[in-house]
Length: 277
Image (cartoon, rainbow, N blue to C red; front, top):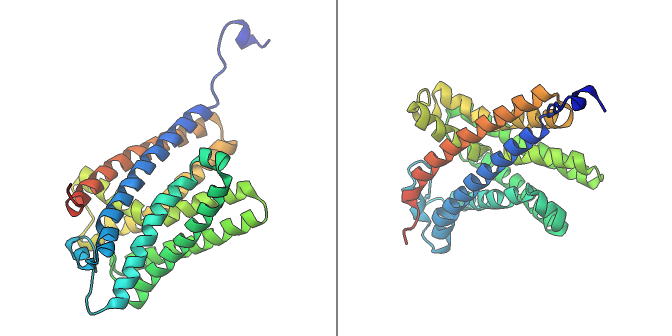
């Protein structure tokens, strides 16, 4: 028996439990926010498609370019892009649930294939709308560059995740799938960051159409910041010291609080566009 145990002193925790709790809370908040976004996509965009009234898209004044009666190709790509975003919001979060991986491996595999294909499709349709059709999604030229980088990362991470699972390297596959999840949800993270910033600061530096310094930074931070947070978590979880795990847990908790604020702001902005029962 060591000396600490002999005198009744409990050995200090290695920080794993703290990091695990912080990460699970982050995921729970992310899940709620993602599915609230899914409800908005289904209740506004998908409903208008199913009912044959895509012109209702123009009720969303936050949309840079909505329904254009004289441009059916644009309307088709926008509709497909939104439908893919809905699949990503639903299927992507299901991939992150350990219970599903353990108890429904067949569903996990097929849902993962669908998620990777829809993420790839969403990235490619986004690039087409951006560079081939001149859609201004915010931030001007710098914003277009940030969205292009995000789309390229979706393609690269998806290809690597697929290759790793084909090689049977499951742990490496999960890491790259997590990275894919972060970049595939870049547009959602952008909304969360912008609306959270607006509630906390009144929109300082956002500028018109996200062309201000804060708006331009959020364009890149929408996927680079989640990637950095994920990398910090993985390093702390797998080989970090007690201090590294506590620091990671604190930063994850701070991110969770910000997501709560941003989700509230985004939800309040979306409510007027949803049907009232």
